[in-house]
Length: 223
Image (tube, rainbow, N blue to C red; front, side, top):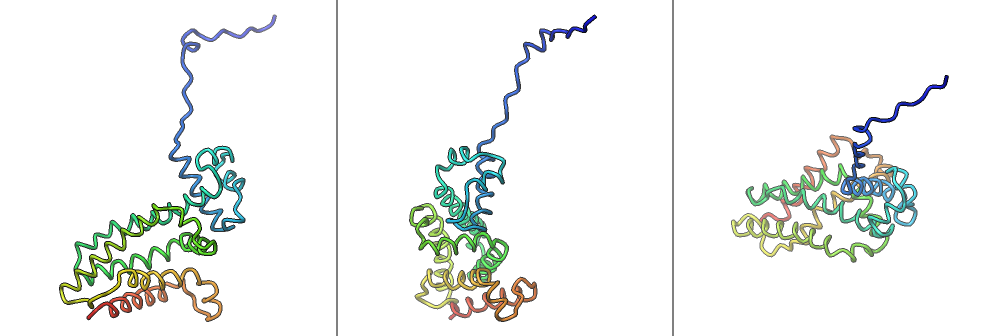
């Protein structure tokens, strides 16, 4: 006697299948994070969309669906990394602090951000190898960056009116002064550290350097 399978109940047959959960924003963010890793390690020229797909358990087709091309994905990575630092800068509330304290907060934030986000430093270095070709294509990156210049400029003007800061300070020059040291000690940490035998990630060295750049900026802008 052979066994027979019981037919599914009408209730089971009528039950609709649960739709697959689809979260486009999460998928897009996962691709961006994997792309950051790939571009940091391989640069724009050496990066492979296949490798990014493997890291996200997705497909090249899906990546091209969201971003169009490897170059467009790289541009999105640039926008994300610049956007991260600019959005945090806007939350520093510099206008609520006395002008010298506001400058100190901005310098310390820039120092810590670069120190903790070496991927940002690496990607910016890669973009400079390409002569800023992709930054030129992004009005959004320029817009975001102009916001911090506006905030810094207002702080400098406020300090000038209070008789604390020098007159005629160029906002972009001060921004470059702050960024240059914070960026260089991360971008060149391997070569500089090896040549001069200094452990730049050491906490005591970092604190000394943070104090140094804060004092250098404040001494430059103070009357």
